[in-house]
Image (cartoon, rainbow, N blue to C red; front, side, top):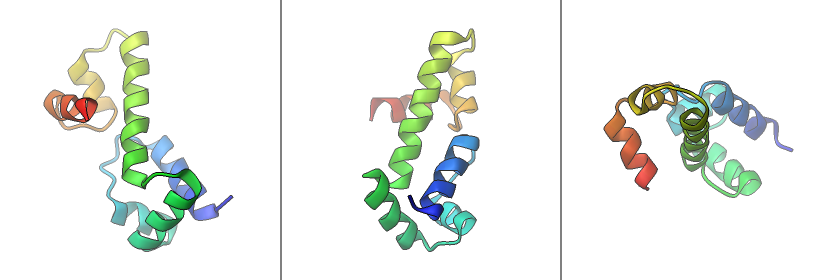
Length: 92
């Protein structure tokens, strides 16, 4: 229902492995960090970076189930620099 939030969601879904920051995402959709954060929480009920982490975990879970990729390869595929970084995110 919000074109900026919709565009942010589309970008996160299209490029989950991108090293997104709130600032970069905001610039990509034409909003300040604070405005994007506020709108995202209003419409999605969670901050953009929290949403991105959950989306990456969903993608990783699917790849773990449906592919023969290693955990390290999946970590890189969904946007983590290493298997250790992926593991820390997964534990959170």
